[in-house]
Length: 78
Image 1: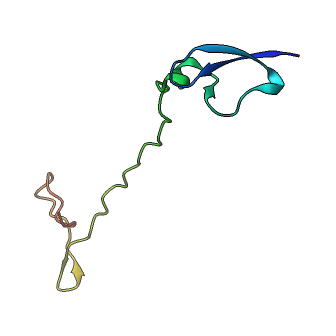
Image 2: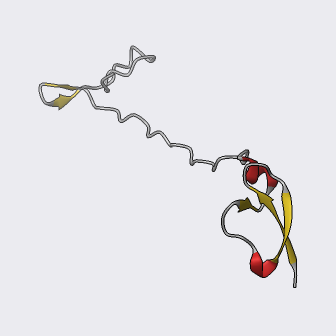
């Protein structure tokens, strides 16, 4: 029968068990997990949605962009 190394939770001391007699609690399969130093699960990065631009209106009609001011877009509100 194959043997399995398991690490005691809290101390990280290794112990050898028969594969069919591995304890389900009090032991971990890696020394870092047994010592509580395992890396936390990686969370998905939150994706920010781009800001929705709102068209500028004057009297219910869209405002056009002024070509004389290339660095400012008057067609959209800030």
